[in-house]
Image (cartoon, rainbow, N blue to C red; front, side):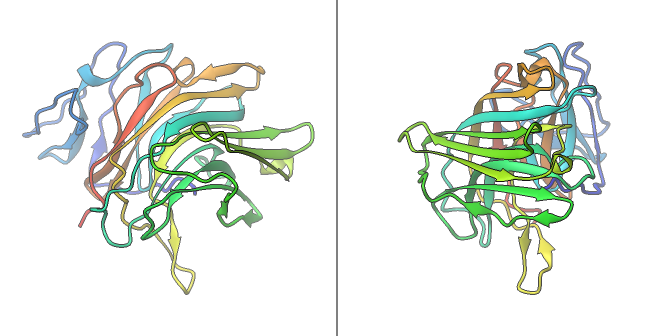
Length: 289
């Protein structure tokens, strides 16, 4: 599911982690604790503040920050090289019974989906509306086709399972490959599909927790409430770039995304990588209501 840009009534304050500079907002704000998942707040002047001492700088590059209507997580964004493979591992979070009515949640690894090219390849897991059990899936979007979510029943998933998701695009034969491995059960599948080289957008690689776009019976798209996933711990997150080598997230320019509904933060990363390949996303709220 592509990234949804939203118009907010607040501005995002960027933190330069390497220099420890914090863009302060005027007005009263909540206090911060780096051990607390609520690491950001909206101030009286309608600005988002991130406590600079909580921002990690574990690689060559410090993070930039952005706000999305449906994504929370990490995005690699090299300005001069492309991504052909992305891989990440996660311990599948549980969906809380306290989740809001009609809520949904998905976590995935992907390539593309940030630019305006309408191209995205992804593999991950999803808690559909009303479901308490996750299902593995893959999906791709091209300028001419939006493949519906393809569930992968041959790799059963359970809350707490450690699972690896990998997305590969091979330009030599225009094939996309989606690989899902349940490390806890040894179940594994590799699915290959024929596309066009023009269907690939290698400008970004992503590790995302999302509230997935839904459709009404009449085809109208909408964003559902976000299911309460607690925390999502991503690790082993890296990508193959056009130099043919593996690169960890923090070895290249990267962005951390915050999911928001109006002025309400729904989910956020922990403002810095635990190490160059690991980070945690935190659930905060299901919607602005």
